[in-house]
Amino acid sequence: MNALRNAGLANREVRAEWSKVHPKLKAAIPRRSLLDMNNGAIPAKGFGLGSATGTGKTMALASAVYGLMRERRRLYAEWLANQDIMTPPHMTLLWLNWPDTVATIRANALSGMVEDLLTSAESIPLLVLDDLGRERIKGTYIEDWAASQLDRIVNHRYRAELPILWTSNLREEELVAIYGAAMVGRLNEDNPMVWVDGLPSMRIKV
Image (cartoon, rainbow, N blue to C red; front, side):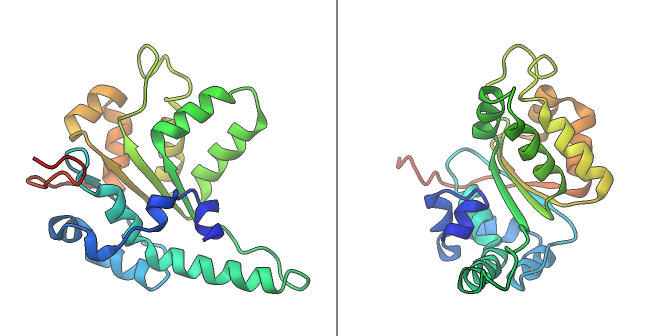
């Protein structure tokens, strides 16, 4: 479990269960990517999941990367048992809740920790960006240095052809209104979002 938390997953995400994911969300995840991750491999292409708030997108994404998480947990356990002869396992997954990450960048802007975080987000084999569009932006996106680091991350990964898995409560045109067409275009080109309508809220029972 420590390995999963070190990758950035919170308790609720670590406990995510595929059996509880809505069938429409399961169907929205590209089959090839899901098979790769179930086999412990990095998917060649990323993808995005979009739907209304509270419909289980984060749980679906956490469940989808379970194969990678399981492999990471195995390597971490092996390293713990053999630290005298083994090096720490290579980090393959970084999970960032984007609103929390923006707050962290803003609070630690003058520390080296921010540069380390951004460098890791640029180069990690598989990056998860959860809840894009829900961060608090000071002024416009371009004026907010912390929030606009998303441009740096997406651009670097686009050029390096590294996959991103992401979620959002906002449709593509709403994301463009926040981030601009260039950034959203680069994100969507290699990591296209599937928007899923008609999902019940898992939080609010009507």
